[in-house]
Structures are given as structure tokens and as C-alpha cells.
View: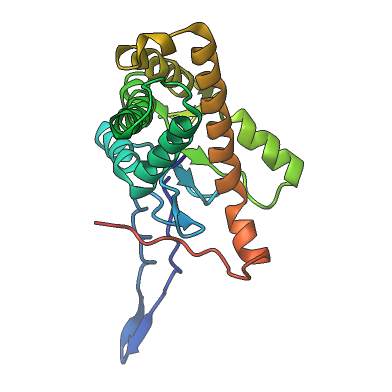
Length: 241
């Protein structure tokens, strides 16, 4: 899930001073601070929200290649990512499901390693490699509360296939969809042979698409949930150095 850039808006301040025989001096409005590289908030205090740009009105600024790599790295090494891999491996282990490493502690460790590798490879291909080569932006840009629920839900789901280029234009999400397929394909190198088959590939595609859908819907509506359910107004996160 992901995970964005927010613009911190500061008020314009004008100061004037007058002295005898001199015209008043008006200070120029202060420049707004640069936006944080990524969104640092956590949904429900746990789920990282790095990929989301919360403010729909924020001026667009593309990510550099270095920032795309940093986004991939932060998502991949986040504690929530390892917790999700451990939980997925546990479910697979309990059901003796794919990847079929068998039973026992060693088999669980292999399942956990495979789950972590699945996440890391898809993040690498989508958020960094293909996003850099194809000049696409891997972040999710919220539509915002000025639109209705159905419009926002449809928009969030459509962003699985539609993304923003580094020049700010809309484009098919080649990096997201292609990176997903490349990551799933690469798993053939470390999955046991009995788990390398078309049904398993299709199942993982469906799971990845569902994860992407949730990863867009939850950030889209999280500020509304904060306000209406928890009675807290959304605050802009603070930039990290």
C-alpha cells in the first residue's frame, strides 16, 4: 500500500514599518516551505501511507529517481510490511497452501522469506525501476471530499490502471501493472516447482489487484474517517530531513 507528497501551506505575512520622512516598507510574502518528500502518517496508527498525496490542490512536483528509490526502500523495510509477510506466511502455512514448502519451522521460514521477497520485488519494479524508466509517478493522488462517494471510489479504483507521468499528465499505469507482473513472474525462481503453475499465477494477480484497490480506497477516505468517526481533523504531516 501504499504509499505521497504533501504541500505545507503557510499564511502570507506582510509587515510594514514607517519612520519620519521615509515611505513604509512592506515585506514580501514569505515563500511556502518545500513539500515533504513523502507522507509520513500512518492509517489507524499502523499502516504506512507513504505513497499518498493528501492535498488535491497541492501544486504537482514529480519525484526524482532518488526519491522513487527511497519510496521503494521505505515501503519495503517498514515494520508493517514484515508483519504482513509474517501473517500471510502464517495463513499459507496453516492451510499448507502455495507456495508448498511443506510443514515445520523451516517451511514457515521459507514461506516468510518468499512473502517478503514477493512484496520487495513488486515494489522494486513498480515504484522504482519501471517508474524511473517510464517517467511515471508511483504515488496515489487523492480526489478529495469535494466529490461524492461513488465518484471518489470509482476514481480510486481507476488509479490501478491510470497513473500520472512525471510531467503531470495522465497515462496508463505501465509501471504499476508491469511491475506487478514482473514481480509475480520472478517468484518462479524461488517458489517450489509444484507451486509454479498458471492457477497460482492467476491467484496472485487477483490478490495483488485487490491489495492495490484497498491501497487506494483506504487513503482516499481515511481523512474523512478521521474527522467523522474519530472527530479529528486531518493535519499535514511534518517533513523529515
